[in-house]
Image (cartoon, rainbow, N blue to C red):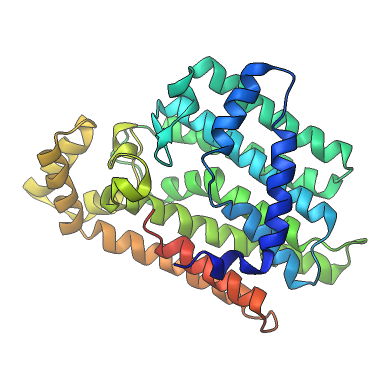
Amino acid sequence: MDWDLVQGPVRRDLAQVDRQLAQLFRSPVAIVNAVAGHFLGTRGKKFRPTLLLLVARLAGKVRREQVMGATVVELIHAAALIHDDSVDKSVLRRGLPTVNRLWNDDVAIVVGDFLYSKAFETLVSARLLPAMEILAGATHQMALGEALELQFAGQLGLAEREYLKVIDAKTASLMAAACEIGALPAKARTPAGRRRAARFRRFGRAVGMAFQIADDVIDFLGHPAETGKRLGTDLREGKVTLPLIHALRRLRGAPRSRLAALAAQRRLRRAEFRELVGLIAAGDGFCYATARARAYARQAQRLLASEPSSAVKEALGHAVDYAVGRTR
């Protein structure tokens, strides 16, 4: 997808986010600055700030506090990624070494904590109290999702509903919060304004669910040159995701036993990994997961449908398409 189709209407607002991120990443501590420089250099797509700003622009001009909200959302996302990489012992992020790989887990944890605390210090100093309330709930859910993921690690009998609970908390909660913040009115909330903000919270959640399920399919079928990480990373970390869950539920007899045995090994040779992917495909795991992701995407599009036609609405539609259809 041409990324300009998504970010075009908010390109200038995102430039402001970049400038604010550079300022907020600064610290009097040299090692924090070094890590910040490395992390900012990874230049992610800033999907969550983009969602927030597009939702905000649906109502007209993006306000200063919404740009700041988008910046804080990206700070929180960065903190979560740094912590996740440390917990998962990941070595690559977007094709570059992770913070824990270049430094160590202690540095990753401390810098992640710095970013979380900086995010909420920024919300308080800017008096963005409604956004702070929303993001406090989201970060709590993200922590619960991380804890659940650790609790369920290696459980090949994991139910789909438990998997959905994990990704709802760990991934979808922050996208839901970003979209809700984007929809907050400038002045006191009216019943209509609250309903609209709640609708965009549901929109963001649906996008987040689609995004994560698609990501879990990519972990098996993507290309390392595009994803910036090795295939099968989730499996090696003990994460039991929807393609595997469904295939184990669908297969019977020897194929199921073989799939379970391969998945339990976690670290597979190349030929074994290809065999595992073939068994998941035979168990309809990839088709099923993709269909579930597309169902969430259709839900998001329905929640967007009542908005008047505009270039911004079209860009949000492209954002939904990207979430479910990307290859990296």
